[in-house]
Image (tube, rainbow, N blue to C red; front, side):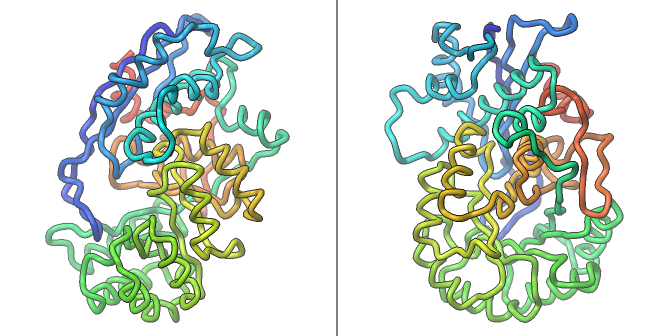
Amino acid sequence: MRIVAIRDIVSPIRSNIANAYIDFSQMTASVVAVVTDLKVEGRRVVGYGFNSNGRYAQHGLLNERFVKRLLDAKPVSLLDDNGLIDPAKCWTVMMANEKPGGHGERSVAVGVLDMALWDAVAKAARVPLWKLLAERYNGGKHDSKAWVYAAGGYYYPGKDLEGLKDEMRHYLNLGYSCVKMKVGGASLGEDLKRIDAVLNIVGSGDRLAVDVNGKFDLPTALEFGRAIQPLGLRWYEEPLDPLDYLAHAALSTQYGPPIATGENLFSMQDARNLIRHGGLRPDRDILQFDPALSYGLVEYLRTLEMLKASGWSPRRCVPHGGHQFALNIAVGLQCGGNESYPQVFAPFGGFADDCPVVDGRVALPDTPGIGFERKADLWSVMKEIA
């Protein structure tokens, strides 16, 4: 099995929505295709990948460094003992001559390629990625379904409380039992009204999470936490700058219910610092590291090993991104669930068209690879690359 070409495009995912920190009016994503010389059942094996929302396309980094390194490598140096592409060996090649630390945007570029490599490997092995992961890394164990929640509730021009409630009703009608909404982009009083409106739709606090996107300083996070603590919300997400571990530790001494964070930490080392210094509690808090943004699954496996050694269960991991890659990982490695974007970031958000959400859970198909071909709007973008 040899890589014969790697192609990428920049795809727009712009919209008028905003969270507490950024708007998405100029948002883009990289989409890559890793073309191999292997044919399975008469069809050439091509792996596809893209980066999650919230980080921009990586066309420059991909083509200046990481794609070039893969294509320049001796083909045999990228293969495992069975003659298939080895994503870990590819990762080592991609990261050659890269200094440690300062992970920044390169983790996104590597994550895009890593996703495509795993898609290709699973297709070559003729199994879905979740099954490949279960067999290689989890003793053959996997979940039959993954818990998923609907992420939305963004600030949108002209969107009032009725519009917010209609959105949440829509998610419940789609089969989700838990939803998430954005906060921190309005006054405390206004956000509390928005939260109350959604609670009237979903029925109880454990069916609603709130997301600040790192906007608050510690005093503001404490004030907001005191206001929402009686509500029993599912979790209080990214209340602080993601790299301010001491502030997280201080907040956790005052806010008893679950805190969620980690989507903007892009390496095992950063994740380890959060665990060491962030004061998070392994019996309740949620870790949201996104494999598509943080050097891919090769690095995510290292992160899971670190977490286990630190006394954390994979069940505390609910990856950010709302994409099929993380969903396969959640099922195959038995994580706690997965985010979902049923209404935003099309065509990258959401799962296979024939895998509905039922009672807040979704099953994966047996399609070899990640399953992009079962999502029509996304596949219409991907198939043109290769």
